[in-house]
Image 1: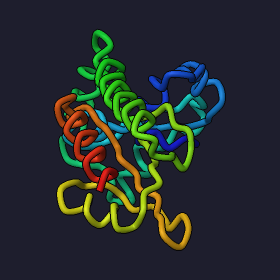
Image 2: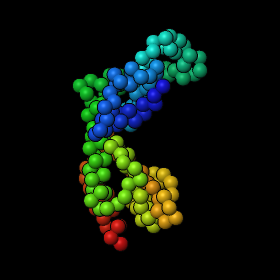
Image 3: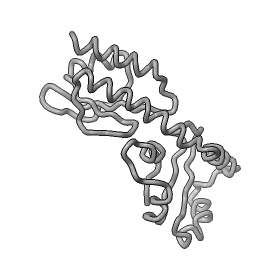
Length: 177
């Protein structure tokens, strides 16, 4: 089984050789998440191992997981995969993350880990994290040492380049203080 909530971002990362056919060859079941690439809600469950799909519809119905008129959710996925929109949206998020990554590198801010995806993990002094939180939304991942922490910025289909540039400007000002 593969959790595909962020699959689009992983498939479009700069240095990946993973593709949907590779995933299908190596899993019995996976799902393609929709909300992280702009869908209203829902996931598309894919069964490369058809034997597992046999009673799936009835199982979700028995467990209360089947939505009335839920088949209309599938239209979102038809549209996302029409003409490569799913990958275009995912690539946009990666492009925004790479602008952030390269800007952060230029500022000399250390990373907790190397990431070619839409998630960038920065190490910042705790007082800088507190100041940054006043203007920006990000996840505090963990303490790094007694004075610093690890934070995560995620870019998405909705991230605008001007917003990434503004964040970099504010990081530069913050680090100069």
